[in-house]
Image (cartoon, rainbow, N blue to C red; front, side, top):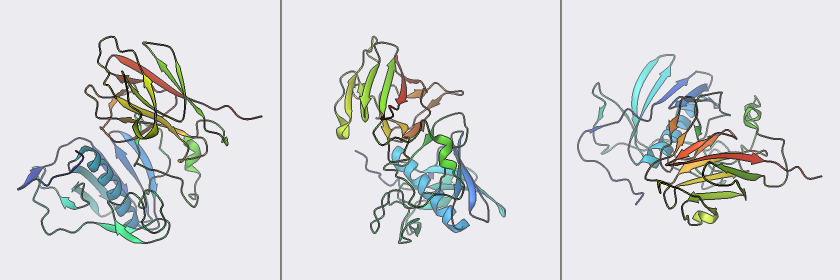
Length: 290
């Protein structure tokens, strides 16, 4: 069940994942999740606050509990808690929050059509754009992967600075690239589109099932979803999601990072993932048509 149930009485908010945000009065800023930093931009600091809150709601929804958010603005720093249902509360010195009874859900305007809606919305009901409150630009150079919201899609208008070019893995091509999966326990597998990886995986949401040898049987039946998405930009990104596996998914970056279950992360082509006793290195291969 992915249902979020309210917790009666005061609740302590865990320190992990570590989320911080810096907001400037001109609507620029950054959000950092477990060491992965992204630049952000919005038309105003108010819209930037809304976008940061919406990103925290997406993370809180993925782990089905409130998350901590440390926000720094020119006027000061605040320790907040963001609930999956879109409610923001101040943390006390002990990291506790009271019940959310009577509190309202944060709202903001769609970044495309300006329709007012809750920060819990993953797609605008009026214009249909995914992540209507998104304020992140391209990822900065960082130690680990950057989490993405589900159903991300291109901006309808380009940002003032072409930050998206920083994450392009290969020149734009009209056809879907090949997702090449290198394993330490078997031969390389090429997949056109998306993949579901496991010892005997199912085709989840149309993903191509890739059965992988796991000598110690530490790889779950459906362990992780690794797929190339062309709806983020023309070049395509690799996105990996831990499908709530028993042994987790870890990036062998410097430093390593364990992925939050059901939270999509964008990673660099060639990043190695450890899944139980299996290591998988996904790579995007672009075959430019002649």
